[in-house]
Length: 241
Image 1 (tube, one colour):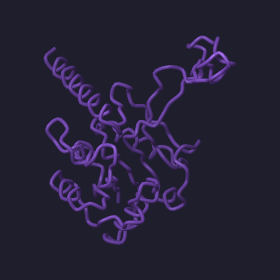
Image 2 (cartoon, helix red, strand yellow; image 1 turned 135 degrees about the vertical axis):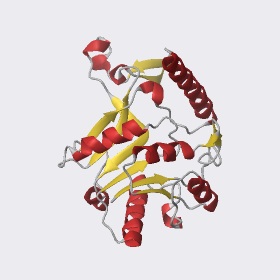
Image 3 (cartoon, helix red, strand yellow; image 1 turned 90 degrees about the vertical axis):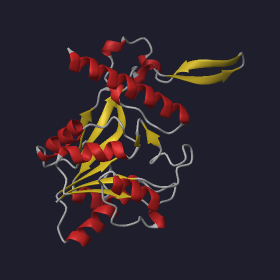
């Protein structure tokens, strides 16, 4: 079976209740649930949460929440891999069927598309030696030209993070990526071994930068709302052409 697992802990500190907070007419978590269901790839779209209210919201959006996550997997320090592994094992025990592939989907990913999830699925299926397929996006500016704050005898100042690259042309520098925080597909054996997600055994699935936004602060939330509104306007314009 193929399982989508959406981790959604109840104890968000910087944006309280962000997983169920309304975002453009739906609870935030309803957007990635809808994208997962739209793919038609999954036997189960499961929300892993320690919060009954989140579970109820997820079920109303079309997902399942057949268990509540144990407290030792719901603190501020638990990584995502143990949470996904717990959900996979719980679903295997409940259904009696082994997992073929598992897709971790982030609860605050309103820009997630069914097409991108499907691209990750197809990429991992086509590369049986790989463990993961993960959403990434390019940095907007070459990371090799990064600056850092320093303090000298003359006062506060700046210095290049990588002095060897400071005079290099942008087009001559290797492109760098960061986690798009939308999804990653994984093989059960990689989950069981808790293999590292960022490794040569992970396939990058590139997401356009205008469809990527971390949502950890109120500023992030407002920025995401404006981006979402702009993308909807672009889609409406394209449909009228």
